[in-house]
Amino acid sequence: MVCKGICIRHKAHKPVGEGRYATGQKRCQVCEIFVNWNGLWCPCCGYRLRSKPRNLKFKTKLRENKNPDDERQEESPTKAQSQQLAAIRLTHKRL
Figure (cartoon, helix red, strand yellow):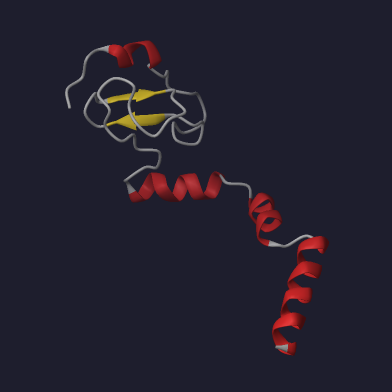
């Protein structure tokens, strides 16, 4: 796993007012660079990209920046989903 210089094409500039991971940038430990890349693996060296910070300070900052309303909507099931769950529970009780 050696940097081949391809990552320079995907180099990410530091965002103003937000963190790198919050904007979707990922870091390659081998190339030692932040890249704008959708995949899990570095396009240059093939090493796994880091998509979350390792430092506790930046981890908490990233968690705080998440919108709490989005998390609540994802956790609560829709009406149709809750009806399906109720139907499944009834069939299991009958058996």
